[in-house]
Amino acid sequence: MPVRRSAAALTAASAVLCVAAAPAATAAPTPSPSAALPAGLYGTKDPTYDGVWRQSLALLAQDAVETVPAEQAVGWLTGQQCANGGFASYRADVSRACDAKTMLDTNATAAAVQALHALGGHRDAVDKGLGWLKSVQNEDGGWSYNPGMPSDANSTSVVIGAFAAAKARPGQVRSKSGKSPFDALVTFAVPCAEKAGGGAFAYQPDQSGKLLANGDATAAAVLAGLGHGLVVTGTEPDGSPATCQAAAKATAEQSARNGAAYLAGALAKTGHLDSPPMPGATDPAPQPDFGNTADAVVALSAAGHGDKADASVQWLAKNSAAWAKDAGPAAYAQLILAAHAHGDDPRDFGGADLVRQLNATGPAPVSTTAPPAPKAQGDAGEEGKGGDSAGIWWMVGAGVAAGAGIGILLSGRRKNKQQ
Picture 1: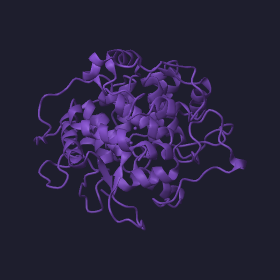
Picture 2 (picture 1 turned 30 degrees about the vertical axis):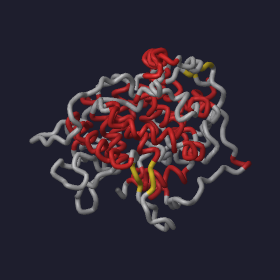
Picture 3 (picture 1 turned 90 degrees about the horizontal axis):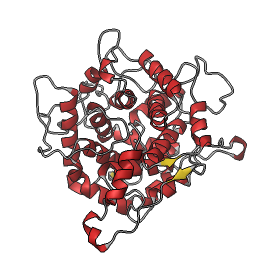
């Protein structure tokens, strides 16, 4: 999913690891010179909690815009995989084999599977990753961030996306009790009748069993319910109104479309989603959430309601530069994937070349397509949409298919659990 990692999932992971969450105002830790980052990794901030995730998003975004990443960058990702197919969030010493103490991460594994499948030539790694994910599926059909915990909407969604991106039919991936991932996904959908958040998805039920709307979980679940991975390309507009439709027995697709309706309504107010302040923050007001807004753009585009995201794209183009610079490679990747899904030019996003900025956070790519030629006056109607040639490149070059330091990560998706 912030830089798309489940806030609540990271909370759970931190609890398991006995790591205190970084407050919103605290910058992400930077590795000391004695703990230099490995060659090939994107970004310069501590990768402990997001190394594989941000690497995977960076590679997916590059592939979507026909940039061929450095072999060193791809090799770093493949080198993180354990022999059983799973990935941890980050392994500092890959010379040591994974063991029972290695904290494997379904979100990192699902993202890595999508990236390696999109790049091609990694079928064995993809199959092993999918095999591990299947082996840790919960009885309700879903997944948790770390195996053995209750299922959550974000983890279930990103794993569904991995199977879908790899053409592995997620609906046929069933638990021992016969439950599919979609069976689990719909249990997180807030009923349309709920005045607060009807149509949205919750991360998990709260302690009383109530489902509370969560923008991060909703964006992730919309993609999963519609059978998409993290990369969305060339969806057709849906002329039907974006409204929540109640049903006696909700399907994953209808629940996803209800989620899109919720996102459309939430974005209509200001053009962006908000996050509540972290505990102890000096400013009690909700803060604009750049990462979740970018993810919502992708979700609405996947649902055929890209027009409902127009204002959000404009808001991101105008306001996201400082956030992306501070957050790093996964943030640039999220913006690229949002622009790509919406049909905009990520090389001219509010005047910024997001592709160049992403590439600068890691090893130089093998090749990258040149920016589109400047538009003639007769092309004014295509302003902001990238032009025909860019659209063709995206259609041909996109992969099948939402990093920063832990401070940004935790203060992003963790905050969204509170919504």
